[in-house]
Length: 526
Image (tube, rainbow, N blue to C red; front, side):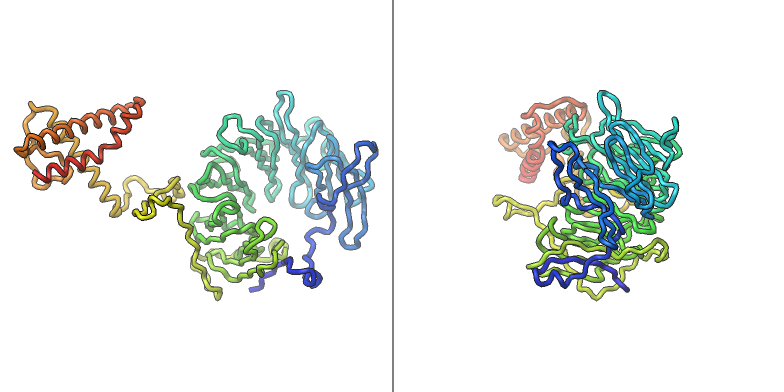
C-alpha cells in the first residue's frame, strides 16, 4: 500500500534545507494573514497590504488595500476561474484571474461574509448580513451572475440570535447549513454563548434543525452524497445524530465523549471522535447499516484526515498545538495501526497531509469488520486513574460515573426483549425485595387488628421480625427502630408526592440503611 504523505518537521537549522517543500494545493492565493501590513488611519489612500501571487512564476498579480481583519480572505471556485472578495457592502467577482477588471458585483448593505459553492458551473454564493436595530440576521443564496433582478435570490433565511455564522455548502451545491452563534447566552446555560442550526436549500426551502439535546454545536458535516448530514451537539457527553434533507433525524448515535465528525470520501463510513480536551476516542460506523466497526483511541491528536482511498485514516500530534510527543499514525478504519512515526524529542512536527487525488481515482470498496493485520506492535492504552484523597486511598474503589451515556438507538433494550440480569443487578434486586418486605412488615405492625400473616419458609435477613426477646431493653430498642423506619417511609412518600423536604428530614432518609442493619443485628441476637 502506498501512503502518500507530505510532512514538514523542525529538527535544526541545518536540516531545514533538506526538507522537501509540500506540493501546493492551489495555483494561486493571497498572502498569509500575518504578512498583511497594518494600514495607516492618517493616510486616506492607505498602503496596499494584500497581494495576490502566481505560485508558478512568483509574480505579484495584484495588490489591494485591506482594512478589515475579519473575513478578508479572497475565495476561488474549485476550477479557479472565479475569484470573489468582500469589499465594503459588496462582493467583487473576478473571472479568469484577471484582477484588473471587476466582472460582477453583489451589493448588500452591511454584508459580513460569503461562501462560494463547490463544484463546477453554475456557481452559487451564500451571503450573510447580520441583524441590526431589532431586524433579524439573514442568509441568502444567489446564482452567479444573477444578482440584480428583483427576485434574484434563490433562497432566504432570516433568524435572530446570531453574532456570527458558519456556512457549509454540500458537495452538489444544492443546500447550505448555517451555524448561528451568539457570544453570550442570556439564559446563563453556557459560558460559550448559544448556537442554532439552520438549513437552506437552493429550491427555496428552509428550516430550523431541531436538536434534541441542549448545549453547544461542536461540529456539523455533510455526507459526500449531499443527501444527509451529521451534527455533534449538546453538553458533554455529546449526542450525534444524522439528519436527512427534511431535517428529520435518521439515526441517533446516543451520547459519548466526542466533539467532531468525519465522513469518508465515499460517504459510506463515519468517524465520531473526541479530540482537543478529550482523550482521542474514535467510533467508526458503517452508515449504510449503522453498525459499529471499531473503537480505536488516538490520544493527544490535533489533526485527523481521511485518505482519498476511503480506507485509511491519518491522525497526528502537531506543534504549536502540542509541542511534545509529536508524530503521526496511519490507521485502517477497522482499528489497526499500519504505520507510526514519532518525531525526536528535540524536534517538532508542524504539518502532515495526504497527497490529493481527483474524485473517482479510488473506487469504493466493500466494508470489512475484521481487523486488518499490522506489523506495528500494539500499544496498551494508558489508563488514567481518578484522584483519590488520602482518606479514601485505603478503602475499596467504588465504580461511579459522572454522566450516564445513552447508547445508540439500535443498541437500546427493546421492551419484551430483556437480557438476563447481571450479578450486581440480581443483588440489588434482592436488596430491594428485602427492603420491600421490611416495609410490609412495618405496616402490619402499625395495624394490630389485622390477622398475622402466615409464616414463610424462607424470610429475608432484613425482614422485620415480630418476635420478642424477653429482654425489655432489647424489645424497647426494636420498637423504637420500627417507629423510625415508619417515619422514614412516610417522608419518602411525601417526597415522591412532590413535597420539598427539610434538611433534617433528608438526613433521616439517609439513615434508613443503617437503621435496617441495626434492627437486623438486634433480631439476630434474639
